[in-house]
Amino acid sequence: MKVTVLGAGVVGPAQAWFLRQAGHDVTVIDRQPTTGLGTSFANGGHISVSHAEPWANPSAPLKVLKWLARSDAPLRFRLRADWHQWRWYQQFLRECTPARTRRNIIQIVNLGLYSHATLKA
Ligand SMILES: Cc1cc2nc3c(=O)[nH]c(=O)nc-3n(C[C@H](O)[C@H](O)[C@H](O)COP(=O)(O)OP(=O)(O)OC[C@H]3O[C@@H](n4cnc5c(N)ncnc54)[C@H](O)[C@@H]3O)c2cc1C
Image 1 (cartoon, rainbow, N blue to C red):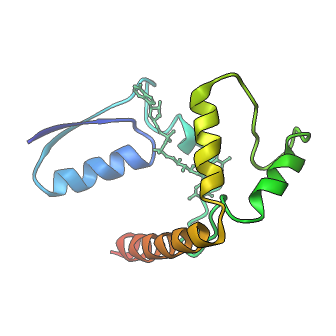
Image 2 (image 1 turned 120 degrees about the vertical axis):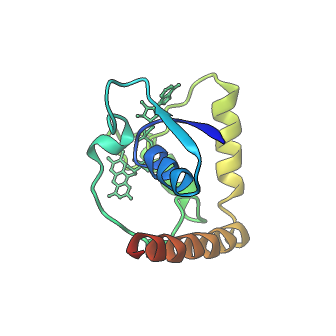
Image 3 (image 1 turned 45 degrees about the vertical axis):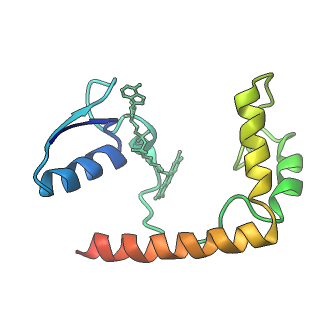
């Protein structure tokens, strides 16, 4: 099958590699002149497969309210009259309940174990 992957950060080429391994004809396209110029350009390079706490957790809503006033907040929320943004906030808050946080931690742990095994392989 001919497959086009949009985006040449860390995720796009990884997807392309697995698709190629599976025998597909893959093309990676990016709006930048070369690879890795988006978010992947200057991340910390930290492989943290054991970091399983989601940003959305029961303590997040209060923290976010405090961060609104800080320009150096680790997670910045710039409030705008954009319903996509408000819908995102609503979804974020829904994930902050103890039950959703527990469910999400289990999923992140499973994803981390899979990522670790895949990275080693
Ligand atoms: C400051 C910082 C530090 C971080 N540190 C770590 C860390 O230590 N460890 C860790 O695991 N993660 C870290 N992260 C997170 C990690 O960098 C990102 O999760 C990861 O780089 C995302 O990769 P990506 O391929 O999904 O996105 P990107 O690298 O952003 O790639 C997306 C690509 O798609 C292209 N694109 C977008 N729209 C279009 C379009 N319409 N047409 C064509 N091309 C398009 C962009 O140009 C870009 O090249 C960090 C992030 C930041 C911001």
